[in-house]
Image (cartoon, rainbow, N blue to C red; front, side, top):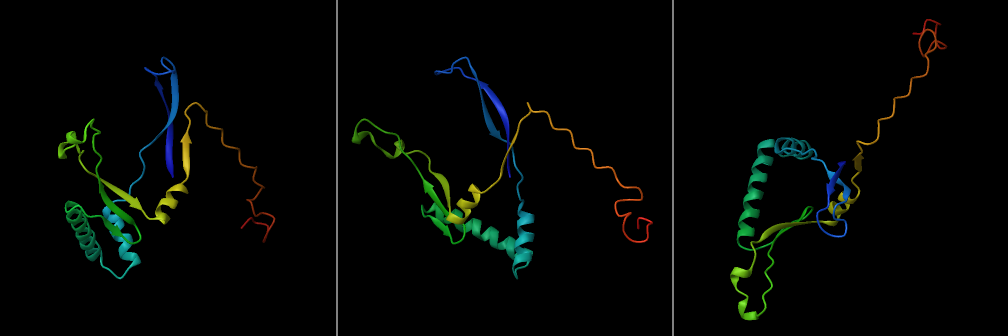
Amino acid sequence: MLRFEIKSTKMSIGKNKGTTLYYAKQKSHDRIQTNDLERRIERMTTLSRADVHAALIALSDVIHEELHLGRSVTLAELGTFKLMASAKRMPKAADVTAQTIRTPRVRFYPVDAIRLAARRVELSLEDPTKTPSKPKKPAPKTPGGEHAHEGDGLGI
């Protein structure tokens, strides 16, 4: 679940200048730590936790090396890591140089199953302007407990 809260900002430019506009801002969310990930993979496979840990470190090293060489890295059930760089637009072709190319960024392109999972995540908006509803009072209990009508009449 992704949690959001309502925030406001006073606009300083544009057609809404001087007005306050409201928007939903994502709150920080839970994160699974490496230790927990290792334990889960260990339970799901025949690998020991040390093997899982070593494999994750090796995977990180290989991805780093391949990206350093300018290559993409595709992980079958996860997606693809790619380096992407844009460039400044120049008035003349002669002005385009290596210095007009911006610093490359690592992009991750998930496989369809992961991308679709993101679309199915539950969204929750916490609205501080709404007062929480009072909890309903429980129905009165029958004398001798809720199962008094059953058994030996002692409510047991």
